[in-house]
Amino acid sequence: MKKNFLVILMVAAISSALLAGCGKKSADADTSAKQEQEAQEVEAGKAEGAESKAAEADKAESADKKDADNAADEKGSKDDTDKAESKNSDPDNDDMSGNMDGLVDNWVFICSNYMAEYADGTIINSSIMCNDEYAPESKIRVTEEDGTYKVDYRFTGSESERMIYGCKLDYKEEAAFSDSPNTEWCAEFEDPFNDEASVIRRISLSEDDMLIESEEYSTEGDDYSERMRSVTVNYYLREDSPRLEDPEELRYFDTVTVSDAAELLNSVRNNRRIILEEGEYNFSDILPSEIKNTYVSRGFSTYAISNIYNLSIEAKEGADVLICIEDPYEPVLDLENCGNITLKGITAGHAIEPGYCSGSVVYLSGISGIEIDSCKLYGCGTYGIEAFNVYDMNVDKTDIYECTYGLVYLSEVGTVRFKDCTMRDSSDMSMITLRSGYDVTFTDCTIKNNRVEWDNEPFVDLDEYSHVTFKNCTITGNSYDEFSNMEVNLDGCKIDEAVKKDREKEDF
Image (cartoon, rainbow, N blue to C red; front, side, top):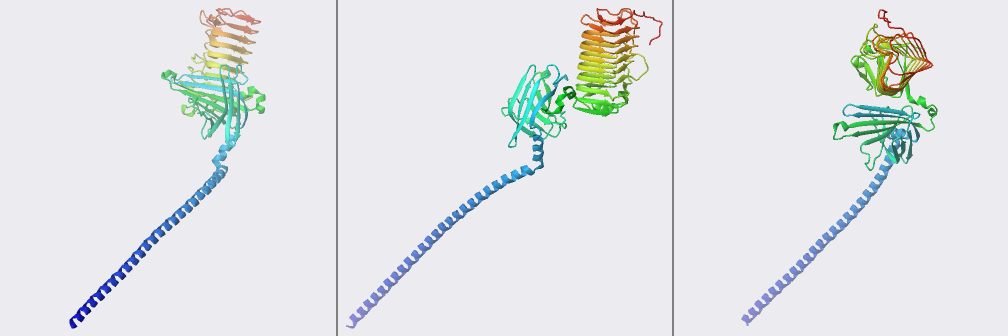
């Protein structure tokens, strides 16, 4: 009985222990499940929080982006406003607008100058005025719209025609060409199709309100002799300019007054009138370093003016002006490759004792258009005027005297007129020599007291290609064996019998 009771107690104890263990395990399981659920909830919360934060970040980024876009838009708008304000306030833009606005108008052609320089040093020049024979016709119109400047351009010459319409102009802060009077700015013709790559076409304004259109052309040929550079410069006035009423006066764009020899040579420019104050202009006194002019070059001991057009050198009214040199072997006034030149009221000669010279007083080569008016040309120069390849020369009211070879020597000349001139007191060879000279006329001239001392030299020496007319001239007191070796036309002239040469008679 006691034994059974112990067994029952043991079973009860074991059962109780088992039940206690089961209850603990169940509690532990419940705790574990709860902890796991809580952990999952935490992780879910974290994930949700992360997603929320990401969403908030995205939202913030979107807002920032929007703000940035708005700011950019505002900045762009502000920049545009600033640019507009800057355009209105920038002095450079003001200068550009002011300069370009000055071009806006209708312009009429008055003059064209052309210069071509080849690699071998050959230079070709030409010039033509609006009132010259065969002058071209040209007009330029410049317009502006919304800050854009455009040009219409038409140029019709005897052998060519150029037309450009609606071409945009680009502002440049540089001279249009190397010798441009406007060194500050120009406007270049736009070439969007690059079909004039070898030509730079520009316009600018001069100080005296003249439009200057330049065309600079260059080529690089395989043949060295074909390489060249040329510049054509055309000048225009506004179509309502009162200066158009006197076209001949337009030949000179400005007038300068000088008082010494270096100043005279440094003032030589195209389309200029130079007035000489009273005094002596001795070119032999000029140092080479004093001359800073591309149109003036130095010879052996004096200077030559070349490649110049529309130049007048005049003595001041009533002034006694002497141009001279001290070297008997050089010409006093040397003009080469020039056109439309005037010398007026000047006395010129060699400042040495009378004797033999090998330099003439006025030496001309390659001249198209020259007037020598009311001048005095004296020896000991070889000739008063020595001219080669000269066309359209007029010598009026001019004295030629005391020369040591003859009065004039003309070779390859055409349309030469001497009128109301006195030619006197010269000696040695033929007084008037023509080689290939046509349309040469002496009208109302006095030719007196000249002496041909060489045997077999006529007073007027012509080749077979030359012809000369003397009209209403007085030819008297001269010494020669033969008046002319070829037929000449004497129309209404007074000519006395020649004084025979007297070898014992003193020279003039």
